[in-house]
Amino acid sequence: MKRNDLNTLAVFFAVAEERSFTRAGKRLGVSPSAMSHAIRGLEEDLGVRLLSRTTRSVAPTEAGERLLTRLRPALHDIQDILDELSGLRDKPAGRLRLLAPRFAGTAVLGPRLAKFTSDYPDVVLEITADDSRLDIVAGGFDAGIHFGEYIQKDMIAVRVSDDQRAAIVGSPAYFQSHSKPKAPRDLLSQRCINFRHGHGGEVYRWEFEKGKKSLSVAVNGPLIVDDVEMVIRAAIDGIGLAFVGEDKVAQQLARGELIRVLEDWCQPFPGFFLYYPSRRQQPPALSALISTLRLRAS
Image (cartoon, rainbow, N blue to C red; front, side, top):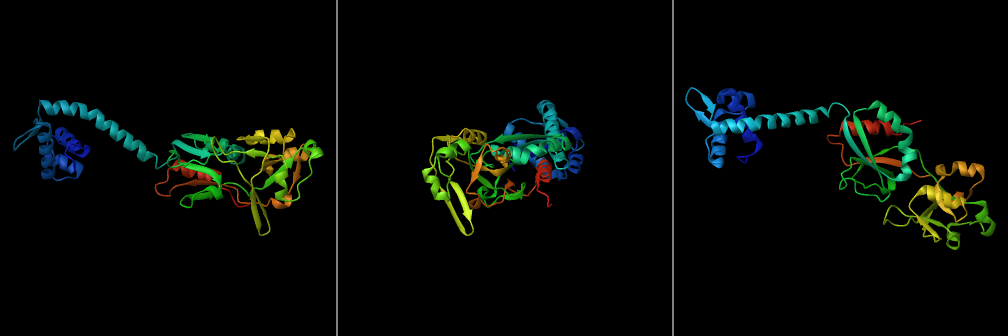
C-alpha cells in the first residue's frame, strides 16, 4: 500500500475524528497497530507530525487540524459519489450511450423510444447515429445496434427486430429506357445507386441469395450516397436502381412509384441485434433498454 493513498488518509481521518486508535480501528476494521504504522509512514513522507499521542489520548496537531479540515469535505464528496454509484445497481438511472446505424432508427428505436423514456425517466439515452461500424468499446459506448453479420463474436447479442429482406427497385421512368435485370450479374450493365457506410466507409456490395447460391455484386452508377432516404428519392426520380430494405419502400411499391426486380434473389435474413461487451455488472439502465427492445416471440 502506498503511504499517501486514500486508504492512509482515511485512516488518519478516522483516528483524528475518533481521537482514538481503538475506536478508529473498530470503525474501519483495521488493527490499531496497522493504523499507527500507516500514520507514522504518512508523517515521515510529509515531514510533519499530524497526531499528538500519549498513553491516554490522541489529538491532531496544528498540521493535523489543517489536513483534517481539507480532508473532511473531500472524503464526504467521495462517499457521496460512491453511494450514488452504488445506487445505480438498484434502479435504471444515469446516462446510457448507444451506437446505431441511421437506417436502424425507424425500424428498431423509433417505435419504442417513447415507452422507454416514459418507463425509465431517470435514464438519459444518448444515441449516436453512425453507419461506419465503430468499435463501441473504444468509442465509449455502452451498447450498439446492427445486423447480426456485422457483430463481433465476443459480443453479447440480443435480437431486437424481425427478419429483414432487401428489395431491388427502380422507377417506371427508369425501366422505360432500361431492361429489367433477370439475374444479379445483369446489374453490371445497369445504372445503380451506390450506398457508402458512413464518412470514408466502404461502398456496399449488393448481396444476393437464392437456394444454395450466394454472391455479391459491385455495381456502378452515377451516384454514391450515405443516406437511405436519399437513395430512395434518387430511385423514384429515375436516376438508377436501388438496393434497400423492403420495409423502407413498401409505400412507394404500393403506389407504383417504384417497381421491384430480382425478388427471387432477395431472401429474408436475421435483422437487427443489440450488442454489448459483457453480462458482468450490467448497468440497470442497459438491462432496461434490452428489456424494452428485445424481440418478443409472437
